[in-house]
Image 1 (tube, rainbow, N blue to C red):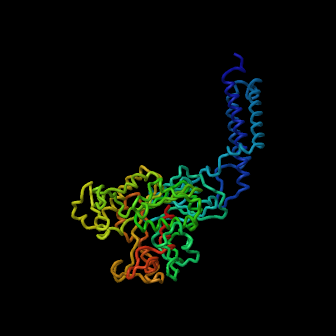
Image 2: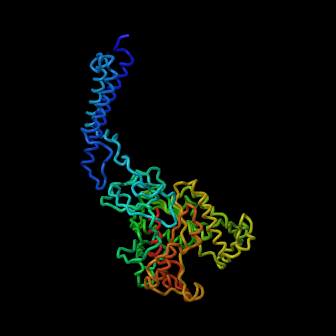
Length: 538
């Protein structure tokens, strides 16, 4: 057998050619990286992974050469290779030169350089010296982090378990953690938020802010019900619109509509609850649209069965989609969060079974579509509402026989624990879903109730104080129910308790003598803050 055709000699020739090719290729890539880094300096970020050249990589090639020399000794070394082997090496070098030449001519090949955000970086736990947490706690923890390389993540906040890289935080439900949307639309540095111990969003104070409100009470006519738009009433003092909630030991992100919609790209946010939940839904619609009626926002209620049935005054809810970002915001009316069904479907005056241990069928049917879910209940759990709605409590599919649940307050608490337990059991099936239970919105009736002369005439802000110092939630039922689950608590009770001047009071569209609304809120107003806290927890 001729030496030039010996298999070992051929393998050596191919190995040498391959190493030469990779040396030139990697040198080219690293040179491009150096040029890129030199041209684009990111404050606070250094490349301690790659090498300046000429330098250490040259030594790697010297060691490689030494190994090749050992293998080639039996054939007279590298220079003893026959013509066919040398020709093979020359052909490889020629092909490499052609590739590099085409590289200069075709910018398309640049995409094969690994992007900067694929460079290995330490984990968040290493940088902060703290262990990660597996889920969002009821007392939301945040850390302000300046990030000039990801300005599209304005006000970004997430849990430790969602962080894949220190400089890239994915929107909720995203399949990848490093795919920013419209990354070039922001040029100035933004603050991004990451969960950290020491911050309770429900602990802080109200402060005056001339930049408030976040939208116009006159302009948001498509989304905001007239009965809650106090700018359309006889009220003259609107100082309640100029207050902003500031938590202690952390900074809440400023709500900005375009940033919010980019983060919610392709996502669905669902509010399910009573009229206070509807107020929060309308508030978010006004905030996200800037109170403008845009043709880019379309009604998609039919996709969720939210249509006005014959003989009803309103549909069971509303759903709107922002076409530019495919973001859906919806509300479903369920004052009790129970499954409700007629006892006699043929009788218009039938009583209704209120299943305390079942969630609304709307949730079981559509939960797989949701990325954010906010539940609330509370103010319809009284004897008057039960009689008006002809509700009959059921447990286990049959009328309730538990004496303790005859008390409506106990029944409400049972319902809250039941639905949170059910929702917690559903979360593993829907890993992209972030679920919240909002604590109860306080009433401010003084000297009576809504139907017995109770009033809330005060129009001066913060007469009962401006600061919350307690660590625990004022809604002990919800805080107890979410404890130990992955359902998050949206704690708004204590901060809203300080805002008695923000209710509709006697300033209503249809004035009823002797009756004031000290339950619902003027809008713009307090419900906007609930959404700012929700935005921070997302």
